[in-house]
Image 1 (spheres, rainbow, N blue to C red):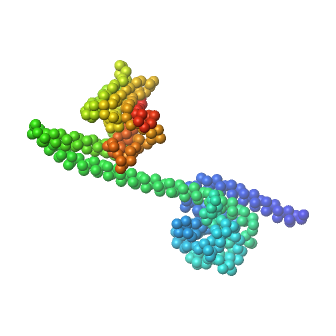
Image 2 (image 1 turned 135 degrees about the horizontal axis):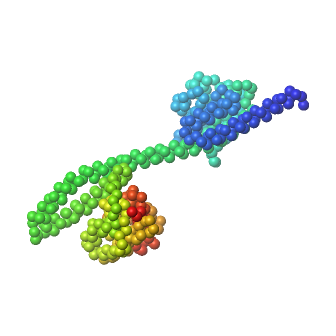
Length: 418
């Protein structure tokens, strides 16, 4: 072997080692880059460097409008290039995409499949071209091209390097696309939630004025006429108006919780007092259905540091839920007990129960176990959501327990002791 041959082999080995090292660096960089536009530019720049060519381009497949389009190209505006449709059936990139095979053309201008419209658009002449498919799982997502080898022709070694680059690039682009789609979906959800919250706040505000008028006139009728059907009708109107006002209060509370604007004023108070406040609020609702409220308290007070009004409201919602979904004449147990540095409080009913797979979902806003068109029970489906928000905003936790439909339910709350 002549010294000249040895020198050539050493240079070849050094070149391959350099390329492999650059491919490893590319893989690390691609896996840490999730911005799609930045990623595309990085891929074309790296391909140009590795293959020592003048330019590189990425064409991706548009599934909605079956065609290839330029996603990035060296020294070109991708927005302008994207406007040029690249036919799959009569272009070099289309041939690579359809056959899923690499293609070397060291005299590209003479090939009838050369798509001159792109060259004319970017004022860039293609003399030689190497293109490889970009595989992702069991499909091809596009084509990576290297254009105009600076010295000599494209070789099989170049095919190997560009193919590895394309495989890494396909995975990185797919990940970046998934991230972008997720971000767009989250943004839509955010906008939808803002619209919903705005509607709840607006409806709650606008309905209070006519509701106040209804309550005022009904009270006037109730106090002004005694002993006939008008008094009874006035009572019905007042009852319905009170129920409507309760719904508006719930809508307002939900809006404040969602906007993280619920003001908390903690104070030292016994959990027994909080639960008694809650029972006072719902005792008439329970009495109308002949339901018994049973206390299961320890004798000694258990003190907590909470907003008394908001915490009582959370338990009012739990108690209303128990009343709504329990049979007339049944029993509801309200209890509390100390557990080390926490207090455990609970509301237990003997009602319709909750399917085991729905124990978490009942706390989702507007969720109802019953189908909306065949409902037997009223309510907006936000009482448990509000209870959960009020408890968790104070560092507590809340969950539901039930052995299944028809077996009753127990809602448990933990709060830190003072």
